[in-house]
Image (cartoon, rainbow, N blue to C red; front, side, top):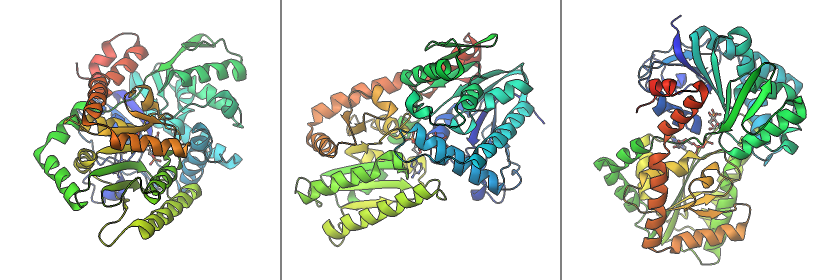
Length: 471
Ligand code: ADP
Ligand code: G6P
């Protein structure tokens, strides 16, 4: 087994073995923020990515992709049901997102979570050179830092949580809260999207584990674990370059023509997830049509909602409800050849997404809770023309940075309608001033800056960051 000096461990690999039956793998980004963030970062770096390829049974042998070694972790059908669909996505995911859906607790799921975390820790230990850096990602793998440290105390271990870390009142519900905290504390550095999350974590370490903790440091045995906020970002330059490509510009114009050249195109792009506020958005939009504030011929909504976690009941129910509502709105307000909502569930490649972003006058990103939301950042990066308006939920991590967006509380239906109207009626000068400020922020705070700041904090010097990110 070849070993690497940098090992990234994430539940999901950026490739999906189901789309490469002949073994001819390409980077095919699965929709989701984690893969979108790490993919541009790791390209052409000497690293190994340890993760799950999306199927069951033995791990497929995957070729190196763009210089990155892919190391698959095998999951059985029971592992997928109890670790991925169960503890990760029916217990932790809803709990960490303000319990907008009811978290479910089952003891059997916890056993699977431990077992699968152990398997990931062993795979990471095998893939890591002596004294390598191992960077563990996200809520599926919170026990890995502690398990890995037990096997390989020589390693430098980082952990980053892409989703929100909840306030103590919510986290305290978890039957295995102490074990989860201790698992994360196996890392040398625990990173979050927001300072509030680091604060929540420190409070819990003090309360549940009686550890001396500040918002920057927690003492565990004879070690000091550092904690902090590192807001994740995108490859701003890559998205900007894509959005400037001639074929993308032509495609964006074509999209507008195909939509009937309306005055306003509103776009939303989400994984089909109940945290994304899709139903609230559809309700606000249909009420604006019903009251005549929005006219279907002048304004169209394009809702891209790629199915996600399709075997989890809450996701199945959401999809049914969204599709029923889209059907109702189109039935009630559309005309032949003029639907009120263009509803698409397909995964798109990056250039089609860039064209959609360029075609949209208003991008509506209104999650009920979101760790960051990279779609909002991608839209801003794609607006190389300085046009377009971003309607953004206050409850997305991105709102802390993209302050010039039209910020909105998506739980407040009237507020949502007002903010959408405000964005639709904004002057080009107002839109341009907002977009310019947001673009400038993302030019500096891109994915490479994120990696530099995290890796510098992890090794205490610039050496690691210099090895893995461009200057
Ligand atoms: P989450 O991580 O919760 O899915 P983010 O907004 O942070 O939310 O990240 C979503 C990522 O998935 C973005 O990079 C976006 O471009 C990508 N994505 C969303 N929908 C699609 C789609 N239909 N096809 C391809 N990529 C998509
Ligand atoms: C979010 C999570 C990621 C996850 C992604 C897609 O971004 O933070 O860890 O990979 O959603 O979800 P999936 O369940 O398809 O991996």
